[in-house]
Length: 256
Image (spheres, rainbow, N blue to C red):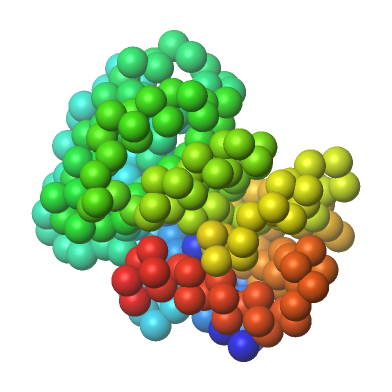
C-alpha cells in the first residue's frame, strides 16, 4: 500500500527533535511519497536539506505563502524566482490568498498569486493553493487566468459542495483532504459524499490539523492513515483502494 501526503511541512521547527524518526515512521506506515510546500525564503534551506536526506520520498515545491506577503513581497518573489531558475521543483506552492489573519496586504497577495500562477504555466508545473476565507478572491483570479495549462491542488479544502464543484469544473484541480474530515462537526463528510474520490488527494498539513484521535496535538505524515481510514468509511471501500486511487490522483497532478 502506497499512501501519498501531498502537503506536509516536515521541515518545521516543531520536528527539530525527531525529524528523521518522524519521516521514517511515515515511510514505515506506507506513506512513501511526501510533498513539501515552501513558505518563504526562511524555509527554503531546511526543506532542501530534507529532500536531499530522503530523495526517494520527499519532493520540494517552491512558492511564497500568502501570509508571508507583506511590504517586501517583491523581494521575496525574486528569491523564489531565483530558486526556480536554479533547480527543479515538483510544483509552485504553496500560494494563494489568506484573509483570515490579515486583510492589509490583499492587493499584494493577489499580485503575488497571479505572478506565481504565471510561473507555473511557464514551467508546466502544478500549483498548490492556500485558500482561507478567500474562495471568491481565488475564483476571480482563476477565472481570469484559466487555460488548459492550469492544474494543481486546493490545499486543505473545507468548503461547501458548490465550491467543490466549481473547483472540479476547472478541470485540472484536486481537493486536498486532511485531518479536518475526521472532525465531528466539520461538515466535510457530507460534502465528500457528493464528490467522486477521483477528485481527491490526501494531505496532513503537518505539523498542523492533526486528525482524530490526535486532534490538538502535533500532526505528522504517518497520521495520514487516519485520514485514509475516514475516507474508507465515507466511500465504503477498503483503505488499500483509497491509497491506490488518491496516490494515482496525486500522480495526475505532479506528473510522477
